[in-house]
Length: 68
Image 1 (cartoon, one colour):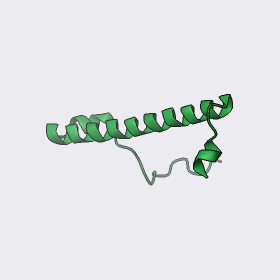
Image 2 (cartoon, helix red, strand yellow):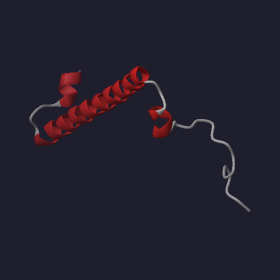
Image 3 (cartoon, helix red, strand yellow):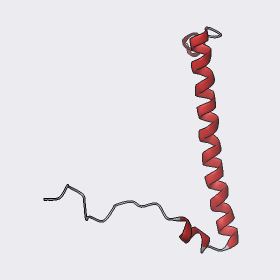
């Protein structure tokens, strides 16, 4: 007896990097720029969350007072 979902086709699959290397250079550049922009936004969000948590824990500023 197998677990549910084993052997079924996935509904959504991310393309691998081999398929990306087959694209024309301008499209490949745009895809890389989109990937880098998503990673940059995620990194800035993580940095802001870290600053907010450290500021809240150290008492440097009160997040709830700033929001309300």
